[in-house]
Length: 167
Image (cartoon, rainbow, N blue to C red):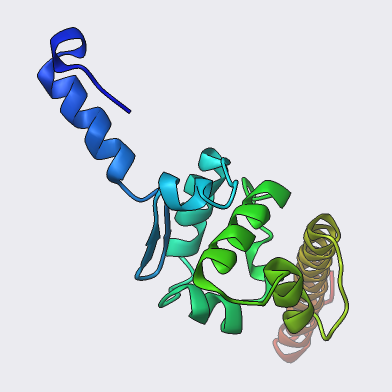
């Protein structure tokens, strides 16, 4: 694309050129530009940017490391959906991972050969998190009840030892 410095201004034209060359998807040491992704008909650049941000926290070395080590459930995060997963599939395809159906191969690899939709994976993760929160709350209530009961028993014993009538 031609960015006219006469029309846009030199700093704007340079910034647009630099932005076009900058990677839109970063997976560890692997960087994917808009040109690379669009060469395999992937034009979801906002999803690619969201995926890059999410993958920074997972500490993956490169795309192959992600393919081999990271299960889909770890990507069941807010702001990541099926489109982000499609972008990940495009990255696998650019790197030649997973054969002719890279995203399916990755999902099957980490789900014991069972193929589920990403929506289903996210629902399972949400349900598991809700169950963990519920169990934590239940445990906290049980602990508070035991603590209160133990305190009452200690007070009662103290009062008996010191010759006071129980209240």
